[in-house]
Amino acid sequence: MAQMFLYTFITIYIGSHDSLKQLEIDDKTKKSDNITAYDAMMFPVIGSAALLTLYFAYKFLDPFYVNLLLTLYLTLAGVFSLQGVFTTILEPVFPNFFKKDEYVKTFKLPNFIYKEPIVFNTNKGEIVCLILSFAIGLRWIFYKDFITHNVLAVSFCFQAISLVILSNFLIGFLLLSGLFVYDIFWVFGNDVMVTVAKSFEAPVKLLFPVSSDPVHYSMLGLGDIIIPGILMSLCLRFDYYLFKNNIHKGNLKKMFNDISIHESFKKYYFYTIIIFYELGLVVTYCMLFYFEHPQPALLYLVPACILAILACSICKREFKLMIKYQEITDKSNTVDDASKNKKKDKEEIPKIQETPVSNAKKRITNK
Image 1 (tube, helix red, strand yellow):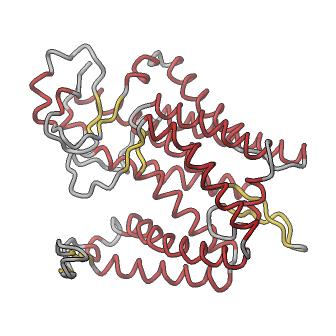
Image 2: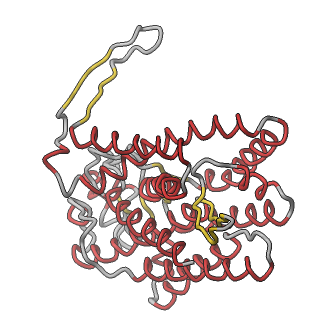
Image 3: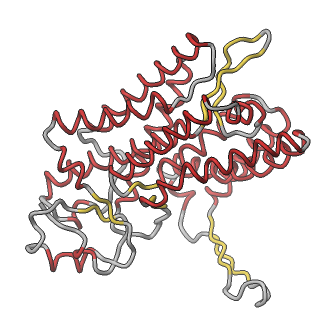
C-alpha cells in the first residue's frame, strides 16, 4: 500500500503542477488537449468499445501475438512520453542543454504524400533524454521487470495529467460520473475487464509486488490515476487562479504571464482532493482484501474526489465561484480584445485564458 501511495502522490503532484503551464497567455509551447462535455459523455462508450475489442482479441487470437503487437506499440509511445517527462524535469536544471532551435532540419516529402515541409527541431538535452528513454524501453521489452514497467506507466500518467485539460468542474464531474458507472459495470457485471487486465502485459497499469515466492503483484489501472488526476490538476489551477486574482484583481495579463510551477501559494482544493483520493485508495485496498475479489477503484475514488471539492468549496463559501470557474481554450480569442468588455461583464466570474486568442473578452469576465 505504501508503494501505491508513493507512486500516485508523486505522479499526480508533479503532473498537476506541470499543468500550470497551460494557463500561460503566451502560447509558444501550447500542447494541451481540452475535454468538452461531449468528450466526457463519450468516454465510457469509447472505453467500452476498446475494452471489448481487446477482450475478443485475447479470446479468439493467440495472446502471444496480441501482447507482442500491443507491447511494441505502447512501449514506443511510452518512450516518447518518458522523453517528455525527462525533458520537463531536467530542463530547469540544465537550461544550456535545452536551447531552443539548436538543431533545425527541414525535410520535403513528395507532394502526393505531404505537401508542406516537415521541420525537425531539437537540442542536445532532448536527444539525451530520448536515448535514455529508449534504453528504458528496451530494458522493459527484454526483461519485463516491474520497475521499468512502472516507469513507463508513470510517464503516461504524468503526460496525461499535465496536458489534458478540463474546462470546468461540471465537465469534470460528468466525466468521473460516467466512468464511475463504466468501471462498476465492467468489473462486477462480467469478467471482461478483469480478463483483459490480467492478460495485458503492456505498461497500462502499475504493478506492486506483494509476494516474492511465488511472485505476485497487485495492480492499479492507469485510468484510476489519470481520470481523478486531471480533476486534481484543475483544482490546483483553480487554487492558483484564486491566489493570482487576489493579488492582481482580475488583470489577466499579470495573472497568467510567466507562470512558475515552483511558485508558493495556498492549495486548499488541491490538497483536500489528494487527501480524499488517497483515502479512497485505502478503502479500495481494504475492500479488495475483505471480499477477495477485484474492485473497481473508481467506485471509491469518484465519490471521494467529488465530495472533497464540494466540501472544500462549501467550507470556504466559494461554491458558486467554483461552479462558474471556466478555463478558456478557444484559440479564436485574445486577452487584448477581452479588456473591451470588462465593465459590461464585471459581475461574472473571470475565465482563465489557456491559450492566446483573438476575441477573448467576450468570454473572459471579471468579478
